[in-house]
Amino acid sequence: MRSKTSNHLLSAVIAAGAMTVMLAGCSSMPWSKSSGGNFPPPGAAMANGKPTGPPPRVQDCQVIGQGSPNKFICPDGKTYNTFQLAKMRADYQKQQQAGQ
Image (cartoon, rainbow, N blue to C red; front, top):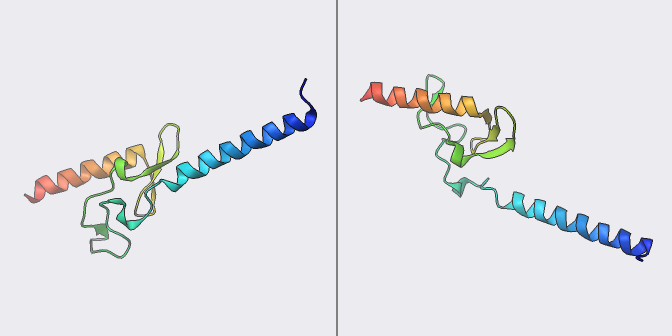
């Protein structure tokens, strides 16, 4: 039979391992400017208060809340839900088609 000290040590090792895995996962998130995000940074060229470049893609953002709808944080530092990202992409595509 295991002693109480052994059980506590095992629990502490498992908790430390779980924390290490969680922190390592967060370190791989592409938050740097070299992450390939395509949305202009704050202060970039704007037309009528709207960015002139394409809106952020879901692929460029990180999930911060799972639910209905999912919530994402994007390279521009703002949070969006799934529907907002889809609407911005659709509006941008309409704008591009109207301009050509």
